[in-house]
Length: 331
Image (cartoon, rainbow, N blue to C red; front, side, top):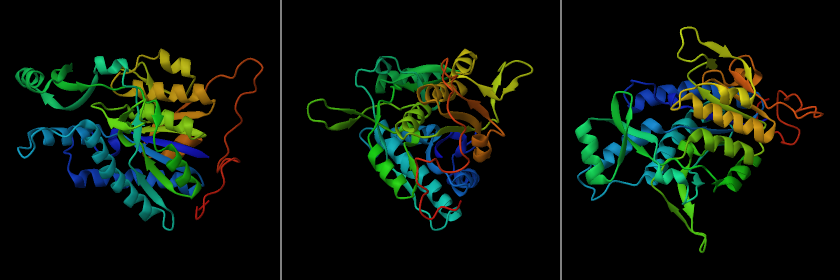
């Protein structure tokens, strides 16, 4: 199968941990083991990842650097996080997949310059702010701040992804047998000039789950895996006795009352991919990617077939018939 695997932010940092390089390398070491199992089972794999803690840290450092006349824009910081996380993942995977090409690609995601999100920023970025710090940032830097629990944080626009600029390059790398790391952090957000075709970066971040779903759809992927720090999507979230959801339709996922800042975007991305393609989407634990695709853990999402439609065929265990086995793959 061709699989797009989207790693949650916990792939590198868990809540409350210090953002030190050694901590992130430790988590990447564990994630790479799980991802390598997919490749060794014969699947084509494209990996994407979150970057929330990393871009927030770089933004804070840039804002406080006295050597700069202005902080680096978010599109540039997003590219920096792609390079940092990409090299950690690529090195770990290369060590587990000797003889296999592993490539981390800086990837741009095209968005609409007129997306309503630019007028209504709602994506949290960076650390906690006091009321005074938030007011000063709004006055001095033009920030928008919003309450995140008991604290204030900066919010930035999160426009819908429209296209993956490097899609042809990703296809070419897959055809050459590479494991590809791409579209990290949702991709570097850019808008295209309608007259010249030139791209320019914008002050925004793109939701990585929405980009992962778009990437999987445009790559004709057989499966989209959204890997996180829980074994399943849970019903009755926040109640005394939450229950694991083993299978769901897109409609059932959308009916759940899921947290907007964590599980809801994952559920929406999985639902969209399953609905648009008829293929498998699954949300499962980061440490068992292969089990998630096989259905032994995680929440499997499939659209119901239309009346008279036999529905999608059962997924093969190895490479799809329309995807050639990659060179040097261990099957």
